[in-house]
Image 1 (tube, each protein chain N blue to C red):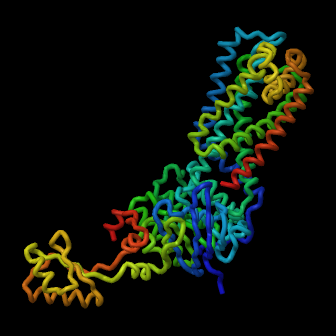
Image 2: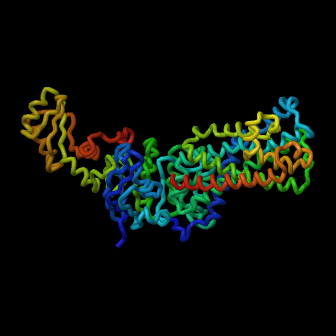
Image 3: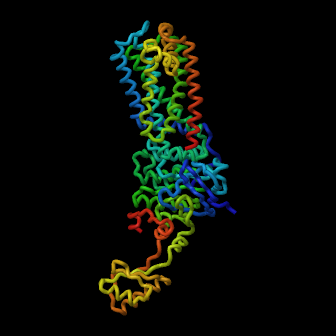
Length: 319
Length: 266
């Protein structure tokens, strides 16, 4: 059987007086995309830097693809590719030159380096700008090239540290599709993010970390389950009807403080929605809006960390 | 994947050559960096030659002959500040993180950087020497002496590139190390680069006579000018040559490994 993608047991990291990781326990099987989700300062970057052999853990066990990160860092370096928070590419070189350099450093011969660079440019939709100096690239193009640099060595495990932080929504969407395509080709990915949508869209498994530990983990659906059940949300057209509507809908209906919205738990999803519409129609109450709201990772995040997650207006609106 | 994983890892030679190539492109495509280094050298050389030169007397040699070798050696120290800035930038932008997460030798990475920077330092030295020639510098030493002085300069360039490599890595950010070129000021003024050490107060003389820059300047000056100038230095030419070699090897032996250690630690 293939060793787990990631295995962390009681992993800690201390920087002087600061405990960045306070005991991470996490086992993720191979063949998955793991998102490490958490607010700023939660320990995400320390965790991924430890996996990337850039930071030595203080104590505990950390294996990636079955290799002990502390005992055999050079073996780990052969199976990983890292794209960090910054676009770590050389601005005074072209995209193609950057990729060839990294390909050569990954161990490719001259010819293979050339074809690997060409293939990655094609794959990330950068072929047209491949011969332009990177200093003339947009932020989104740089990030894609950075992602590409982590790919030319064809790593088994791709490590992405906040891959889309600071990108505009369009560039973010482009990068997301690039990552999804890689995943489709069978690359395992460990990514950190503070964006819930990012975790939701890309990951099979999410580990929420806060205060240097894993506070919850599971599939996106399992985690949403932690935040409770679906809710039917109703808005009446005439505010005067709101009280009456809450009355006819029964004791579970809750009138929202602004007086126009009513919500009630939906144990049966859409069936409950249809029932609510029927009841209100029979009572002669006109509706402005109605829908089933599923709990979001936001709700989970808030419930677990006591803080709302980073908001992401552009993508939220697009989704 | 469309590309296959490489079956081997990059050799140290490949790694070093890739880093030399990268730094070379960086310098060639950001001509401001070498350009400013050269301009700085030119301006100061002309000022010393024509502004201060008349007021500084050196027994037995025209001042321009005394000045140019001192200037070539001292000027390299100013140019090396750029190394620290570039290296600090690599550390701050995640470039070093990428390299450190790859199966390549850290020694080979920094060696590549050092070799490229040595080439820059020597390039600026050549331009400075050529300008010196244009304003009246005439070497009178033997061809063998000139050749040996070039070898000394190569070793010295490597040593100071290593020092600034380390400074760049410990400095943290480009802004923090930006001013490091200023380190060249006390070292070059408190040496025989621009004035004979004998003209300084006794206490300063003791420091100046044994610091690496003076020994290197005296060695190069003695080798390219021959007899007349060695009479003005505190030590014999042999002493200066051996001393400058020892200093360079010592700096290299201390700072290059320190830089590698610092790079690995991240």
